[in-house]
Amino acid sequence: MIKLLNKLLVVLILFYFTGCLNYVQEVKLYPDGSGKMHIDYWMKLPDEESKTVANNIGIFNPDSIRSEFSSVHINIVNIEIYTDTTDSTTHAIINFTFNHIDSLNNTKAFSDANFTFQEVTSGVINFSQFILPIATGFGIDATQYNVSYIYTFSGTILTHNAHLIEKRTLSWNYSLADIGGGKTLSVTFRPYKLKETPDWIYMLTGTVLALVIFFLLRKQKK
Image (cartoon, rainbow, N blue to C red; front, top):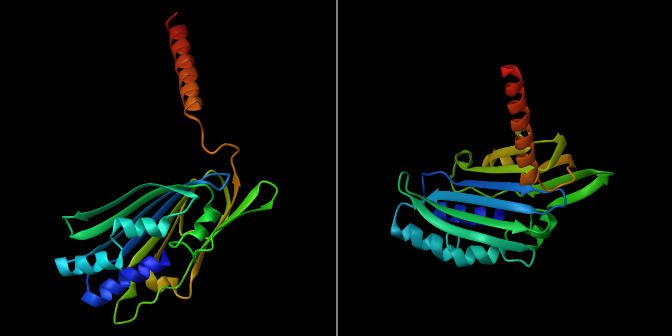
């Protein structure tokens, strides 16, 4: 997505926008390397002229976005473009599933991300994603533009360099200035045997718990 972020910055430079540029990438990663990704990026486009330029560059054009992500390894679920009337920001939403996260390296959007998903020792996976430096200049305050990466892993987290961790979900948040010469997201984890806990396990657990409570209450009444 570095190329796309640079395109967004071109639009900002052309119109000297004062609003923020934001990019959020959320990923659910399964033990076999497959998963699903949700991307939301947005910026303020104050008039029709700026919207036309953005559309011509392709950053808010569904067909152009689809081209960036098209791959035999990806299933694009939906692409949505909308304007938030509360703050006049234009959003692009992309949702897709992938066979293996390494395969994203073959797409235009992630050609420089260098995703890795490798077993380093028995039962332990090392994951990484590289974030290239993003050129700004032209008087743009790089601290006003944020990129966020949120990953949920199906396994036990062993090591990481995330800014925040909550159970199995890790988050990284950078301003463009923070990225500097580039950043690498890095996580080592021990994957679960299943992609995710099947619904029937939750149902069975709930049923057993309900029966236990029922018999305990019945026993107390006697």
